[in-house]
Every structure is written in structure tokens, then in C-alpha cells.
Image (cartoon, rainbow, N blue to C red; front, side):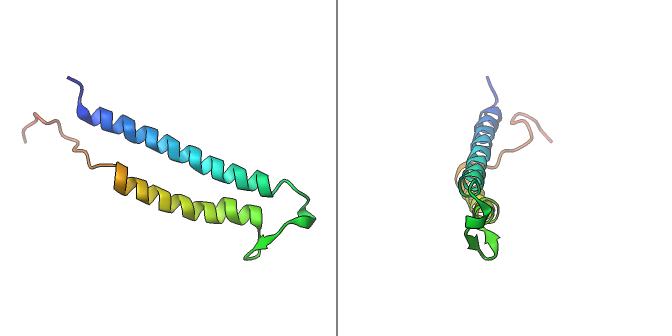
Length: 87
């Protein structure tokens, strides 16, 4: 019988890969979407170019919040000891 811990670890690894892809999509979308124009036409947020603010600063805050939510809702505590193992 396959250990249930491996099934949980596999699911959580896929969730982690999904989070990395979301982070990359946010970073790439803002950095190259807003930052691909002429620098003379950039808009600024808090003194930073908008592409940098949204891709690096706001994107990081969003990802921290998203990871916290995912950790609370989808990840679970898994014991390291085998179920049949005695102390």
C-alpha cells in the first residue's frame, strides 16, 4: 500500500509549482507589459516606475498573501514517523 504522505507531498509540490508560475506571470506581465515603452513616457508610483512597482513591490506583497492563504487552506501537517513505528 502506498504511503498517504507521498500523495500529500506530491499534491503540495504541484501547488508550489503553480504558485511559482503565478509569480512569474505577474512579474513578467507587469515588467514587460508596462516597461516595454519609451522610458520618457513611464508613469511612477511612490517614486518607482510603474512596471517596477507592480512587478517587484506589489507583486511580492500579493504573492506573500497568496502563499499564506494557500498554506492555511491547502497544506496540512504530516508526521515524519511511519504509522507502524513504535518509540
